[in-house]
Length: 310
Image 1: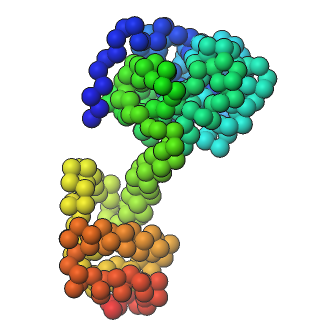
Image 2: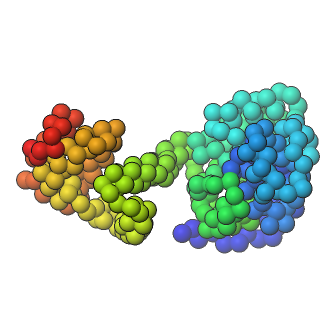
Image 3: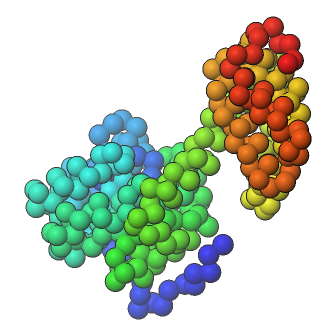
């Protein structure tokens, strides 16, 4: 955990009016957290019915207005739009004169650092990239989840203290990410969190197909222990047939998946190969067992459909 201390009051941002451009799951949550810290949400923009509902739930009595009106009313503006829409939004706001000198402009994209805000910087804005490493539901529970949440922070050096102070006020832990490392940082989070959801969902579907009535109850303790062990011990926590070199068991897995859920086979093989490589590198998989295992994985796509071992 970060060792950041509560900042000196002189480094804390003054009480700010806060606006949100893009009322998805993240923006209203961060604005609500800033409100708890004493800042004042004054405007939010959103188009879809879901955005309107989220804004009403998390930011009651805050008016829903256009992005230009949000920019005109707020000292600190949260740009919480999808990654691919962010560059165009920033350019548009700068070109139309919506950006005010001295205005704090914060985006929450994991992919981008502060440079994506350069058009607004040239217009006098103060650019901050504050990405919460958290998955959001768009409900009030998200505000509580920000407590202890790490934020990937990228900003000009002279704004570093202000950026860190805002994160701490929202209950988070600032983690400085260099501009050039933002794409790698974001890829790492997507690999760990987004792909985990896919793996768990596929596992639950397969358990239901195997007759398990409550796959969530079965997986909960197992996955909780696996996650805890992985965070504590890294590759030393690897277990299961791949790490043990049980080629016959892996072959049986692939054959069964081909019969019952062929769409899961490529993912199973890819993860098994990655697991085997890591287990070999860390001395968990014995080299004499690895050859047969890697052969099964290499030929897995052509295993017979009758479920027989090879």
